[in-house]
Every structure is written in C-alpha cells, then in structure tokens.
Length: 375
Ligand code: ADP
Image 1: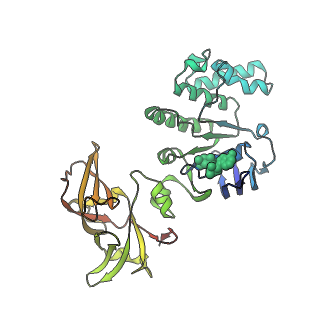
Image 2: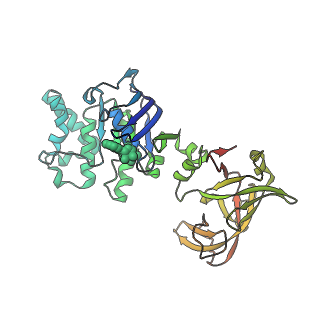
C-alpha cells in the first residue's frame, strides 16, 4: 500500500517566490501519476516536497495515512530518479546500485540478490562491472532506475528522467518504464514538461500552470474534456486551434464570425444548445486539427460548421498531411492560421481557397475573460 495525498500544499521559497499554491492531489496505491506543465509551473518543487528534498511551507503531505511533512527523506520509503542520473563516477554499476542498501546496512547476500534481480529486470546484467563513463546515456538511465528499484520503495519519484536521451531512446525508455510500473506494482509519480510523455505514461495526469493545478484526469478525458483553454492548448500536438469571435443568430441560422479575420462559419443548430445566453458575446472557439475537414470529404453524419480558408502551407507527413490555413486569406498576415490534419490522399494546392468543415460535436467554446470552458 502506498497512497500519497497532498492537501493544500504550498511552497514559498526564501525571497518570496510562490512556487506551488495550495495544491490538492490524491495519488492512489499503485497509480502512475504524471505532473505536467510548462517550465517553472512548480512540478519539480511538488515532487521534491514529496521526496523531502524541499520543506513544505504549509499544507499536509500524507503517505499511507501518515503525515510526512517533518519526516526526513531517508525515512519516507521513497526513491527518486533524477534527470542527470547522479551516478557515482568512480563506482561500478554494481556498486552504484548497491550503495544505498550498504548505507542502510543490508546483509551482503541480500544486496547481491536485489542488485542482480534489478539488473535482470532492466537488462543491464552484462554491464555490472563497468563504470558509468563506459555506458551509453540509455544504459546510465537504467542504472539510475536500478538504484531505485533495489530499495523496493513504496513510492517511485521520477524527475524528467528521459530528458537527456535522444528521441528514439526516449520513446523506447518510456515504454520500458510503463512495463516496469506494471511489473513492480508500485506507486509512481513522474514529472515532465512533455505532454506526449504524460499522455502515454500516466494513469492520470495533473496539469499545472503557475503553481496551480489546472485539471487532474485520465489522458483521454484531458484531451476530450479540458476544463479550460490552457489545458485544451497544452494537451495534443499539433495544438488545438483557437478562434476568437462571436456566435450570432441570423436569418439563415447560427453563425460564428471571427473577430479579427474574415472567417465566417455557418453553424448547425445543434451547436447552439450549449451557448445559451452566450450569443453575441466575445468567446473563443477551440477545434483540434483532426476535427477540421476538407468540406467535400467531411463525414456527413456529424454536425458540421462550414466556411472557407486559404491553403498557405502543406506539410506531408506520409500517413497524413498538416495543412496551415489562413482564415483571413491574407498570406502576409501572421497568426491567423488554422492547422488541419487531413488524410494523406487529399492534396490541396497552396494559395487556393478551400471549403472547410469543422466537426462541431468536437468543438469547444471558452469564456474570453476566464478561459473556462462553456457548457
Ligand atoms: P518546474 O519543475 O515546473 O519547471 P520548479 O518547481 O522548478 O518548476 O519551479 C517553480 C518556481 O519556483 C519557478 O518560478 C522557479 O524559478 C522557482 N524556484 C525553483 N527553485 C527555487 C529555489 N531554490 N529558490 C527560489 N525559487 C525557486
């Protein structure tokens, strides 16, 4: 059992920097929770407070029902894996992994058993006699994880452990950590600024910004039901498109008119239901790239909003294409782009106006002042 609860946890650094503002997170036993957000949002500080490497200014940290605020790090039954691995250069892989257990006065044969078991799990058995400098980045990373595993802690904490690896190795190691989580059945808390890492690894994700939790949810719920514009824009790549404008009701039905572009969309009536009391008000329409279609190929069973935009850039990705569409039709204007993700069989030419269709069952509306979702 290892349940981690943060209740109104706050961190104010010396000098008055408020790094974490009253965070509430409940991490269940054996759960894999990812803290994600842009640089400086307070993720590492939160993790370091769980580890005991930073003091907690106010609030409670509970592990398995016990208040841990004043318990020294070594007595928290937690192991942390850092970004820079922090291996001892003069020690072999074996000694690096055994070190923590030696300090804790474990018997030699128990140390040996645990180191070999961890090496086996991580596939680093052949390197046990090597020094860290004779290992690749990926192998060093495994040793760092191995050093945590041998402790058999209740909770594993990871602070951007993949950021020093190249792109391919990151993807591979990501999968390995996922497998490890299943195999060890341990509670894991993982910090990253990379939303793809968060989406692919977490049972649940905590999205943070400016020291505050924005939303805690499963990856798919974050993607499909973001609570505000920040979460909507942070999760997903390419990002959700945002259009500022107003929805009005005219003779022909509902219309969305962009405030600073020429884009005008005729909306299906179904889109109006959640806009009760919001007609004629400035709001933000959010639509993901995959929910924008070439109107001639749009699925007809969806509530579609129809309009047109100019094709500025076509990026073929092989299996799909990314289209950069100018909503103003003015190719010299920056910042009026919509990104659409289309089937690779469509080959629009640049410089042409293209009829577009937005799937309104997937669109979101946000309040312009609070950025909160409407409806
Ligand atoms: P993240 O991990 O999300 O990048 P951090 O938790 O490292 O964010 O930092 C959160 C905020 O606290 C930032 O504004 C950062 O500058 C500040 N901060 C971090 N460590 C210290 C420190 N030791 N002293 C003062 N301010 C700090």
